[in-house]
Length: 478
Image (cartoon, one colour):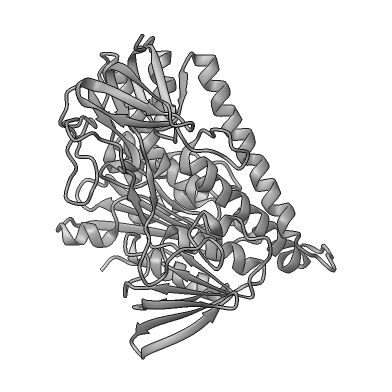
């Protein structure tokens, strides 16, 4: 007997598992297909984000920062810490424990909400049928009134640096080092490259980041990107822009990397090399030829603003479709689709998806950058406030960076909030909440912010938009 469901979700990452849980909560008979296996050989839920992405990298970022602070930052507080060392295997083991707890948590949520887990590889056939191939090679076909494809993404591989997960690794391999490499190379100065480079630099590695683009953090606001480059360089990251890797050769557990930059052809030798040049959608053996689902020219599944594919009743969400490859974007798309399947009115606001880079200081933003708005011909007023003038940041000895608020010069509506500094992600989220409700800079300025908090920096930056900041000198209007 073929099993029949109201909703079948392919993939149990942050898009898929959230969509499955929401669909079940809305009273729909739901199944979720997942093939990823953890180190114990059992199916692990949560996708890239939970198993080899967002969560494990944050665990290592936090561990490495605590080590760095103990070694370099305690003295200013009058705390003497001598002979501080790092046990890398113990740090990695802690990261693995966190992953296990969270994947187990998702499995528990499936059970609590009545989601059926189908272990194996899912493939969409014609007529909204889905073939599930188990790890033993046996197949079954399930039928669905609605299908949600949430197959995610995987690291991009480049021919000049083939990954062996030993000397040359991708982001997954970089989470498993059992010792600190003396010399570490990172190809790509994006979110993943900067975060992983930061982890190992704090622990003592000599890190060189090779970025093919001439511009640093092109997606970020230029003022923020400039500050970030200056800060990360000061922290020891050797960031080389316009550096195109042309070849690599592994010799005696080291890798010689050839690249070209403004100075011509160069060679550098590293103990480990991380390839972090981006991610691409996973569509391998995902769609039968007659499934009817179309891919765009870049290999993403083609969808509209409601995540509907070219086949009625078939949706796709997360990294396998257009837009930013972010876990929170995938999750909210999953909720939107489940709501729409259940007959509710739902639409996601793609203009207000926050972006975060979890270096230290954190880098985060929501809305548009100053250069985007200028290119669109929008007149703006800008207010900034440095954490160096924040009493709370001083108390924490964490005064690097600033908050930037951009507002429409005619309406005062906030169009972008950009932060580099302590708790940047949380402050940007405050901006996003205000922007969702159409806040003006004046609105933010009129609100009462508790003192002393880091949030006051957002308050002051909003006041500065119209020349009314209290705790810094305001720029005179021309």
